[in-house]
Image (cartoon, rainbow, N blue to C red; front, side):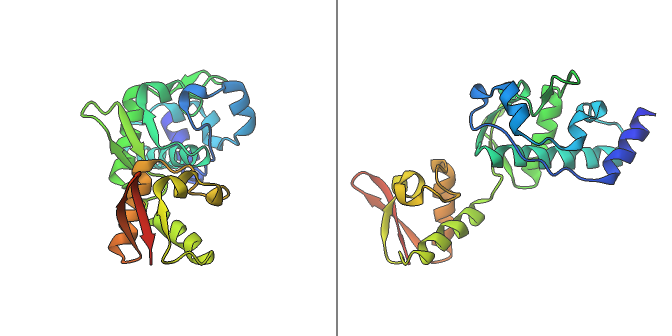
Length: 207
């Protein structure tokens, strides 16, 4: 009956999560719960147990994937430790006393990997990079900013792009270095930029 109920509930809707804090170690459960609008599945106990029925599990995994990406996007989280994230509110609903197991989290993350939204950092699958926006999408945002401000043919350091005052109000402000470089590589492939070596590190010239 529980499996049937979950199948029916999951069939009604897919997850549209928003999310939490930039660093998992800094998450405050109480304030997070107040600031985050949780999806309805989050308070449904069977959601925290992977279901044996194939169709039901597919819907369940799609819901979890959506939640994780929204979680990371809202709080600009790029690097995740599986053990740490298990204790964060996204996988640990203290209100209903349900927590997704480490094994189940790895299944969810593996599903994200198949979709191109995640890369494992180690063979044990204990840490990963989460790409809630792909490098090509970041590159497009960065190039739009460059063009909008008439900065074509200008040179920037990577620090200026991700942490400079001029980009303070942009979505890519604070972008981690590994993702910034991949985004610029995507633009370089498109002939819109060239990554260069500067005295104080890497830079980029936009065309």
